[in-house]
Image 1 (cartoon, rainbow, N blue to C red):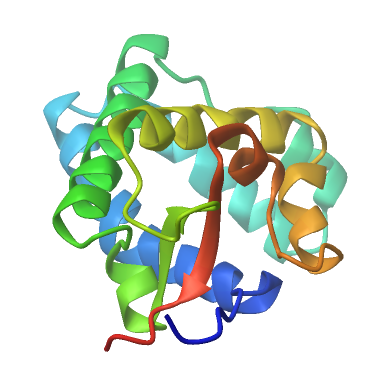
Image 2: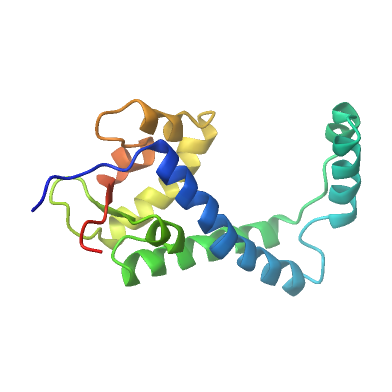
Length: 163
């Protein structure tokens, strides 16, 4: 195997941005319409955006849109399943990762991740987020560029040299 090149913070951030556009946003649109608009109060969101854009951040943050836990859970679970399908089908990559030429592999063998690692890593995103995003930010400082979710799952994100 060639020398392993670990994917750093900014390339992973870019991949996540693309995944939000190509995975999460389409799922969100479908779920919103399936919920018949009951997932969250879009009109309140629009009003808050208008307040924020006019410079009134305090008023924008005063009232948050009401959300339906049922539809939010359906969204989160659907994104998780779709992501795992891509990881399995595209050997550790999602559309965003594929676009920037990186993939998730086992941290010891550098082979494809298994289902347990995929599930652990996905749930690890929650932990990484709840800890004030430190689980993601630590990618910038570690030599092996692993986030908390990578450490929990035994994974690492590397450049896909095979492409």
